[in-house]
Length: 183
Image (cartoon, rainbow, N blue to C red; front, side, top):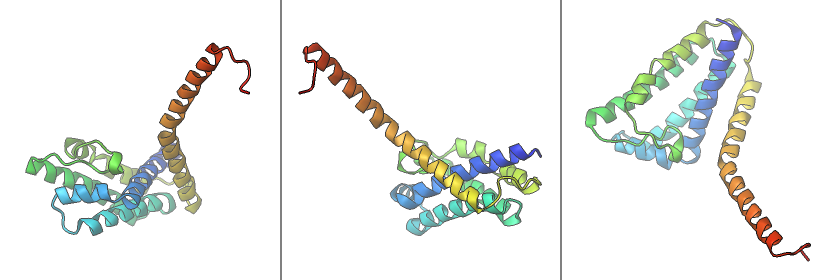
């Protein structure tokens, strides 16, 4: 397994899990609603446990990727997502997926089932690779920072764009009024 593939798979999977965990732990209402709709017991506890499990799997992918515990957690998470999809499909009810918090617009179903094989593949890649590149606690911090910056840019970009357009309108109005200085 090339070192680059191993590193990229682990970094991207860890980033995805950190983002998903952060959404579940900081704004738990969305995952609680999903779990309640699925009729899962103890949705408050289950939602928090899922967020903690995602965060733990992300940390393990970056700190001890060759561990059997890491592989098992990654596969278990994928199985839980596929299992939730199977429950939703079996009941014939549309269940909003809170995979990434309240902003998620997807519905649980075939997507999670089709993507299930990706989780064992990630576990296999990370468990069987021999590279020790991009391994260690510092990579948890780097990945968490990258996710934070990415989320901030994604959320602030629309606001910045609207503000820029508004300033352009004001600039045009100022120029058409014949004023040469703001005073």
